[in-house]
Length: 290
Image (cartoon, rainbow, N blue to C red; front, side, top):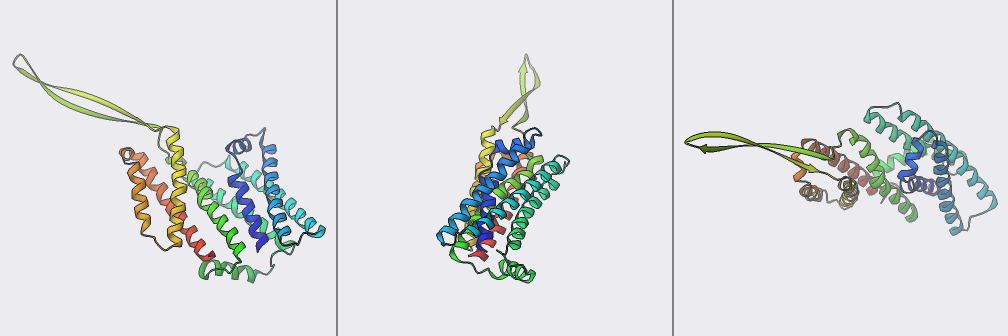
């Protein structure tokens, strides 16, 4: 199990923490796609090597045979990763629905995890019995899985990355079409009564007030969401779910003025609910791990 968790941790570190926006943009461009994918896969293999080699050295288990076995594992996982990412990029171009894009994003991660598990099973670093896998999933979801302290540390690291950056990317995909404009204009009409030479008349004054939402503020919301999910995860682990309401109230106060824009209000509500659901689910997974 430790090797599976090491590679899984390395995968999420490389996919979410070490993949820059620039590299992600280059992967979407046809003329730079292959090179960017090779660089991305190279980062994965480098991180895998660093993590597994460090563990083997600490356990005094590093040998030529073991090193060659893991070199083969890293190479095969890297080639599969390249193929999955290339297929995902080609599929994304044909999709228009954000729901479908979100499902492809989830399927992409599931396939990467499955590839790591299958390759480790072929090299006899994981049990090949389906009953063992079924028992492991049952314990994880219903009773709690028995892990060593180091394995718990790796599992919690994986859940933290998923709860912050993994959930952030998924929510961004789902909310893309709901994103409010960078500015909104509110119009108000005021009637005034005037009196001139013994006659009265009504005049209307139209006021246009434009509120701008700079790009910096919108990006800041992403980091607020990350902190929000981290706190919710802590609340779930400590069985303090009522604290979530206080957190949401504090977050809402800072955006009170923007709620006058209906589109922003809908965007905020859906995003907050998605963020809470993701954090609660991952928090319960952390409870099973601990």
